[in-house]
Image (tube, rainbow over all chains, first blue to last red):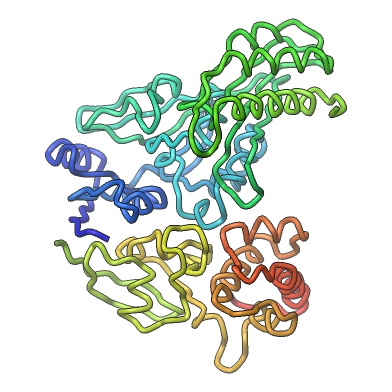
Length: 288
Length: 162
């Protein structure tokens, strides 16, 4: 491992000033599971690490008076998976968090760090996109809120400005008839990086769908909502044929990545299959 | 480059140390403290041979800086037994033959302790997922899973501190 300075600011404002002063050559470290791996592989060689692991006020999971979920950015994936509030009110989020990577990463990696790293082959961004999540960005100059859809810009790229830190994630309350499901495709059971992921959130009565949100991740550079498939499902009674048609729209509308882990055609096909199976499961229909 | 003083609890005892920022927790344990039970395997977060408990939960010490352990309680494989009495998970791995070459074993045992702490009565599938961050290159998984299930039974009869 190369040499670097390890800085430990006491507040978000102090961390923000450090990030501005040090510029491009520094990186923020929270849990460190992704960053240290990138550094060990010499993909990143920062001269300074700004550690936010001990910052106060970036932990804790709560629900406010309007019913919005607030997840402190330093919450680990295991914290999210185990939270009684999230398990009761946003079960698809808890279920997703319980599957991220492996137990070691879930105990150390943070949900805030995961979003800032913007690795396409991971689970939280896709699931949170379907949940219409927002991120809170703090700095020495104050705070701003951004929809997650605007925060995720491209492959490993976010809208985070040089002086900003992600401090919390906010998730709006779900409608009483809402039901969600997060599913993914792994190339092998032992691999922890999904090749395709599908997050569904629907409002339904039986098989009658009044509203649908569909987010696709892992197979695209950033998670993507599929408006044409969402519009297709809204107001429709879901049958196996309808589920397949919706999945076909999803597969047609993505711009899949094409790389050594999976070519574009394979990824498009995976998305089609995972989307169809997820819809069948969510609407209580038999799998083919 | 920066050097940091830290205090932590290691295998139940307070430890104070001075480490350069770049020192990995795995190297700190093995090279600075001589606790070579924690193994360096892939050193890229894949194999889990370097697993240790941080505040009772499994983490990979090759993906942690020593300085990140400040104020935390670290338990390595050396800290599981109580004197001559093995931890029930260690005992089970012995009884069930949950090891072949033994290189992955400290990590497997540590990950199993973390799993059983959160889920004292896991199913076979839950054991598989709970050990999803650990590889056995001898592929002796069947006996490893059996060892964890056996440990769960033993622990149910006689609870243990870790």
